[in-house]
Image (cartoon, rainbow, N blue to C red):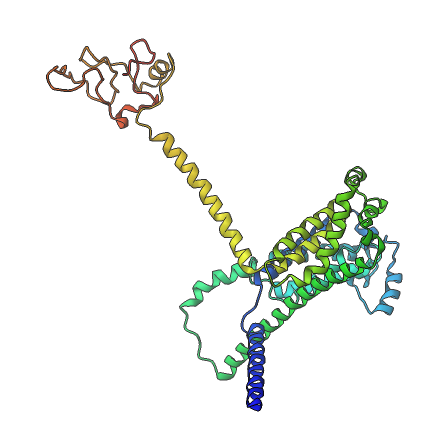
Length: 439
């Protein structure tokens, strides 16, 4: 009896393990995951590096060019020890450097737009690696994560959403839907399926590596902070706010530093968020954690003057948002725009659908009527109700109503709204050019 129980338990464990392996294999090879997140990474890092190159454009020669204190000869000596390389050190010519800089700007812009993304992702990685290696001691370290992500994005299909490549594929699809598929050989179909599977596997592995890199970054940063006495004592941010090198606005840093309790709480919360980040990714708790990390990085960008580092971390955090979040944003924007347009049209219809047009002030209608000739004071022949008739209506003599017909003759006859609305905006006018009598 016990042997049968052990066999059943072993069979159940084997089946559970086989199901998990099958699920993981299907997830890896079935379809590419997080296509929108990969596109956000492409757009974010392409835009960040383009802004970075444009910001340093006046100082490009001192950082990467011939005027840099880190000369090409020193860079070559370092490359021999580290194994790095850079296209900027292939020539000492200033014209060659300017050509490389223009090439970097164009590559970043095209990578951002998603034009020929497969090729542009490789060129973008070469550009980032070359500029990083050329001035490895000249930057603030904020481009380290951009360097890693540029290499990882080469593996991903980051041009399938929100790109010029995706637009071109959508425009080409209607022309090829009705075209019969050519009868190819079995080998050709198998090669096509193998290529699709390989692209899917490489993309999914690339996204997994990106997620793992961010988790390692946050986890190691949090554990490293725990070892320090200043972070344990809650005074670390106080010292950070008083570093002269990272105080772009000393007055603002001084104001923030006055709230000692909040500064201490922010320090403890920073350590907690960084250590807990890898453990909250598979639940809904990750959303408030991502919001708090967003606030932390905005504070670093403003108070410490590290916008490139903060922007790189914010873009990396966006990789953990699901695709349904990114598909919901355009729908939300369209709904908001449609709601705003519908409210405007409703207000316009309400303003133009009144049964009684707005009354003009004294003297206004007479001036408009005499100027445009749209309304002329012509009273009805009934002496009890001197109401003005529009020009377009016939000047017929209407008999006075008798008192025995059962109607209320204290009210004037009703004028249709369509014929009563003239160019002056008011069908009622007195003989003196002012507002007429209207019951």
